[in-house]
Image (cartoon, rainbow, N blue to C red; front, side):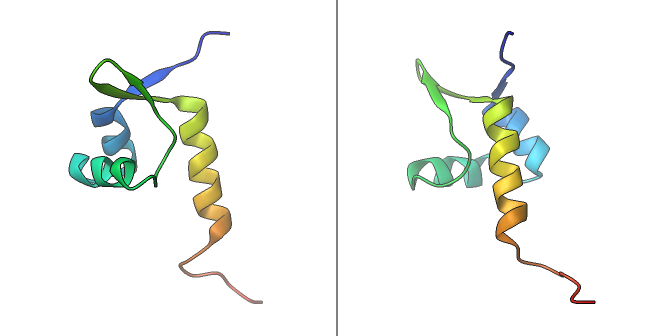
Length: 66
């Protein structure tokens, strides 16, 4: 199965955050896992989806305690 790779701009658009925020996360060792390809960061869709799920599981925001 071929992996789908996303650019920094595609990931920023998906997460609805500025590209600079994604760059700051990468510089600080936070954010989704990426691979450096030349001078570009590329994100595997499978890694991004796993990272998104971790963020949901970590919580924050309105969880109902009914």
